[in-house]
Amino acid sequence: MAVELSDSEMLRYNRQIILRDFDFDGQEALKASRVLVVGLGGLGCAAAQYLAAAGVGEDDAAGF
Image 1 (cartoon, one colour):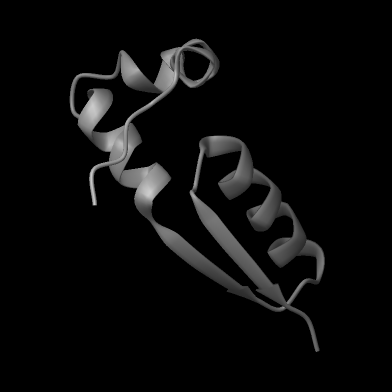
Image 2 (cartoon, one colour):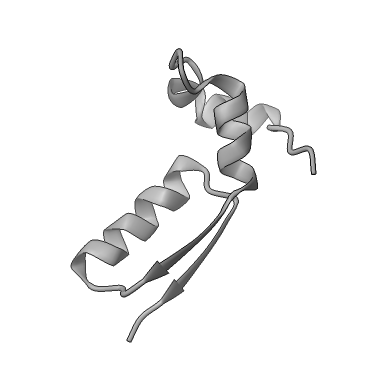
């Protein structure tokens, strides 16, 4: 499945896209990825926020 970045996403993630080893392909792969964060304590909650801000396409969280 080909995932393309919109103009607003390119502006939002431009600091990640300009990295030499990351570029557009890396950001598109991140957008196409799925993540599950298990445990929403102090570390899990922050990790979920950072993953969402980085542009992960789909994230789920499970707290117990």
